[in-house]
Image 1: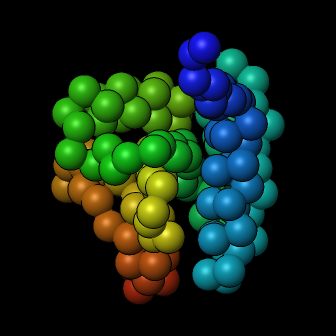
Image 2: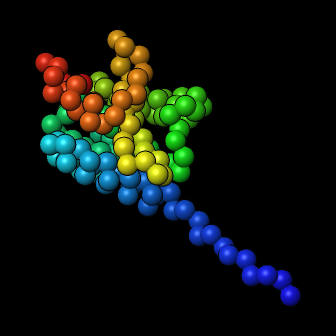
Length: 134
């Protein structure tokens, strides 16, 4: 007689992505920037993952993974390319969180400064202190 095996349920990546986008929108809203999940189409300027009217020049791509990916060159290259391709004239930003972390990290893809990571709170604080928001 063989021992029973427990089968893990497959992760529904579409549902996981939608959940992460809603969570990120709530985090922006809690910081004083009301936001909502964007309408997902084929990518592009008109379909960011999250829409935040008070930060109209920012194009948000939201990524939630089981493990931290901030040091993965291959993953960053993929995320950066997607964010840049979809952002149009907006500032492409990737918001990333992983299991076990309550903190959202933002990777702003600034042409002047190059890509850099900061917490969502720091990103919002910087947006408040600069004349032209990111």
